[in-house]
Image (cartoon, rainbow, N blue to C red):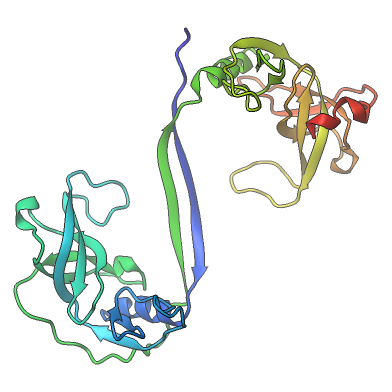
Length: 313
């Protein structure tokens, strides 16, 4: 049995959001070394603050300053910090109830080891040297012996308040396509397209999934399809994607390869974008060293009859 493929994969994008008055005051306060909570209808002070009362769901906006000192309510030791975490050396994830707050804030505690942390440990904020109005303005917590620190007397009114944030979302993982798609990818290296036939309904799926999505039974009979096919439906792309060297507008289409019962998607080239149509007969165009077709182009054949591909729309 051939070796199943695997490769590292990263999914990453920036998440941009605007801030309401409560979150704006909270993050701007961190920039100014001030921690603000919000007063709920039941009298509790919530830190981090929320915009709507957890009991009544009413909008709340009564800001309350709390101390940058507090008490650990629970914790877990992180012996192997990962990329993007607050500290590069082992540390404790802690929930800290700041003095004056009734809820706990999650952050990192810089401690020499797990034996130095326990529920009830007194801590204080270690502020980042450069602060921009983000949760990372709290570099971490550090052990502290003493009572509540003095407040600044802030009312939550600041010059140049933070209006929005950009958070980088990223997921790193190892992807394995499995047996069926490994065979599919390896066949593409030979400029062949291979699907698998369901032993029950006899449909041929490309790319293969290892099981029939309709019947739920395993598939292992390989079937070579194409290389030509029919455009079943398509869209015109007018927005240029980052790091994609294709000029807009261009066409992305679902293509039913001859002999396949599932349409795959690919770019259409070799024809003006406004001349692409349903039923257009196309063939793959390969580039040297590529493991999959660069795009599909018209074959010059007459368009396929609608009845031959309508079930694949």
